[in-house]
Image (cartoon, rainbow, N blue to C red; front, side, top):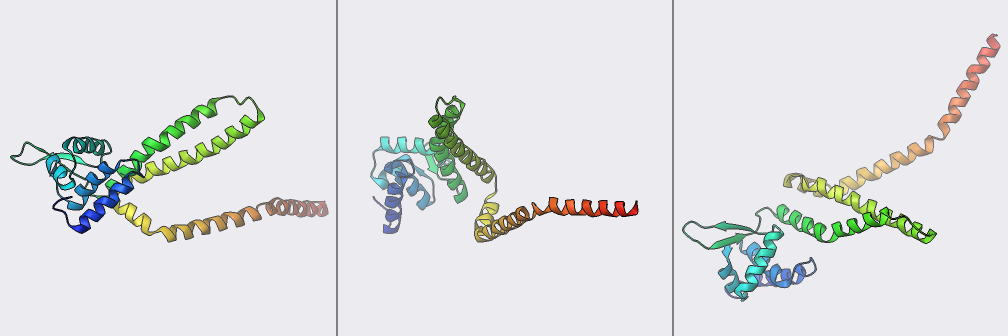
Length: 208
């Protein structure tokens, strides 16, 4: 790497290693990290020079990053070359990564499970297997719906929501306690109603 501080190099190298775990190769991860950490638009030649990559590898990496919506193309006044920069809002980056991972990993699983649930089980073992698949499908579908809701939130709301982590957990625990108490009390209600009816009947008999 050239013309980069040790701090920037450390970040770029680490991001390249982590990129392979997120479904992108090392080259693409390093290109993105360079654009992010320098915080200024770069053209493909500048990227190639900084990272010591071939021009063709940089071009392919930029195309992949564009497909992920992790970089955008722009032009500088009086310059015919194409420049690239990442989204300025860190939340946009985070949501783009999650959306792409869902498209590549979650949606194919949901599609397979839908097909499996449409089949008629031939044996008891298949019925058990299909029921377990249904549970998995319902959980993933619920998670996807939650993700869609989160995607629509503003960055300010997302930040506030994440800061409320322990508070939300406390509220959910209180809700579970209240629901549990309510369930315990419900069976006693019919008995109380029967006693009330019986008392009312006794009163009518005495009156007669």
